[in-house]
Image (tube, one colour):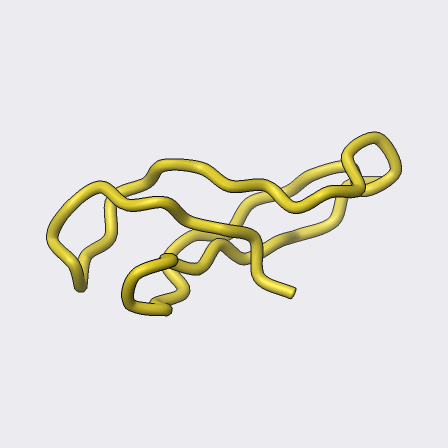
Length: 49
């Protein structure tokens, strides 16, 4: 079963993106490179708790 997750910018803390993942297959947190509107650059975004 897929669950919604929220991605938060590591630099400013802005919650910018929503995605889904299967928590049974991938229990660890995801970190991806995405564009942050507040920082005006591409930064690392980590899955929110």
